[in-house]
Amino acid sequence: MFGFYEAAWFRASGDLIFAQWLLDRCADLSDVATPQSLEVCQRVQSWFRIRQRLREELGVTSTEADRDETCRHPLWAIRPPTMDVGEIVGYVGEELRALQREMAQSDSRSYGILERATMVELVETTTELLISRATRDDETDLYQWTELLEGQWLWKGQARDAAMTACEQVAAFVELLVEAPPSDGREAVDVLTVEPDAEWLWALEMQQMLKMNAREEANRRGVAKDIENMRMWPGCRVEVFGSSLSLYGSPDSDVDMSLMTNGPRRGKDLPPELLGFYYLKRLLERKVWDEEQKGTVILPNVEQLKRVRSQARDGAVGLYTSKDPKQRQNAVFFELQMELLAEAASSEINDIYRRERMNRGHNATSRAQDKLWDSKHRKNELFDLKSLLEGEPECKIKAVASHARVPVIRFQYTLGDLDYKCDLCFDNELGLRNTRLLRAYASYDDRARDLGLAVKHWAKQRGISDTASGFLSSYSYVLLSIYYLQVVRVLPNLQDPRLLELAGVSAEYYDGVNIAFCEDRDLATVFHEQNSGDRDSQDASISELLMGFFEFYATQFDYVKHAIAIRTPERSVPKQSLWGTKAKSWRMSIQDPLQTSRDLCGMLHFSGQRKIADEMRRAHALLARWGSFLDMVC
Image (cartoon, rainbow, N blue to C red; front, top):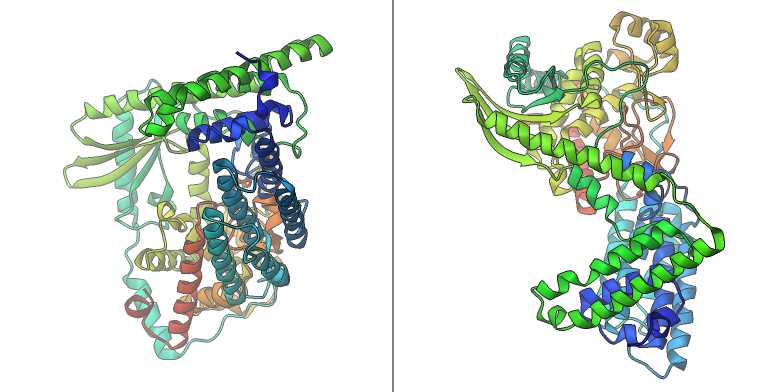
């Protein structure tokens, strides 16, 4: 048996992170030829280097470098981009031409299985990066990329298919750019006068929408009190949040509840969000090669190498029981390769200890594991809670969403005339505060509530209010309505530092950001009158604001460059200032007003964005012809 130093994948570069990626991918693809060919491994290593650079630019790996931060906010860490669209096209084009020359001089003119798969991934990743970052000014560079894709010299088989699909995606994106509003949304936004008959009709239709009344709110609080009185948890309280109390709900809204186990918060800082166990576990068990890297020169790191060794030892186990007969057939070969990789990792670890005499301490990895343990404990508590609810005659369990980012128990609550769909989670402190913030906006002006309910109804009727299907949540549509009303000076910014100082509101911090807001309507009114200036739109009718909402998002707000942020409506907020490499030109971005590092449009698909934009334009066109809101627009 030869040693790891004789393996082609080791001789190609000595980079064990690359070696782990190569062996994992080859095992998945049943590619036994690539790990045994030095020439192909060296060529694949070039593909890997390009791949990693693009993934870092795209923000796929960069947020996972700091494991302690990963546990807190795995999706939204900010990393500024280092390449513009022209530089991306130039970089990838130059690298591909170099590979073309290398292939022309090579004795082997055919691509291996892994190499073909990596070429497909390269095309897809580059295209995703370009349409995530490009604006109207980059149209020429986008066409240069499609010209490269249309060349016959490199793309064959699956790579050719991927190149053709990428060309179609770029064409669709350019079309989206052409249709998107060109304004930054911060120029003068005037509310148009509505024709009298339409004014009367739309106002009447708004009144027909069902709203949550005080009795309905009391019923829902009664459900929470009933759950609390079941005394399933020592010293707990059960709080209602979400649309049941935000004033943006309707009688058919679900009852969102949070079982608060930590007691009243102390101090100015809110407790960190505890993510779901399975969600967090998926992040912590990511492959080492999916972490942040600097090109292909990876500094020796003992913790990384220990994880390479651990993952290599377990890497081939699943192949023996795979449903794919080819994978089972190749299991022995890849088990041997993984053993060699583990041996190589151990050797490198020993060398580092000898050179540096490193002493392992309680580092970020162990802190991450502590968080995972806390989350696992909470997951077990969730199922304990499910068992307790099953013993109550009023509750019928529907599902336990234990794999969700914030796990919940879904159940039906029935008692007498009360019959509600309920979601119950643990310690959702942000959810409670968010509900209060929305309620403060809805209470400030009745038009805010009416517009928010109308937009939510429209989105639901048009089938564009479902995050599971790649659209926006109903909460996001409420924020869109609030932001528009702030822009036209109907609503103030209840998180404005000057207002907080005037109202004497104490600071409340989450992730180092003051998320406090003013709930004193009288003081907010005084502040708004002093700072909003003379704007006729402040006296606009709800019908005029309904028309204005769709005109604003269909023709004025430039979502390609800017984000919707109700905590800073006074100025345009560039997406990249909030999301860095994770900013996407092709979709809207909405900053959560409390969890400010979160983009609420993160689940939005490209097709979902196009559908929402189309529906905005359709609604605007129909309203411009004074059509019925409920019968025609919805």
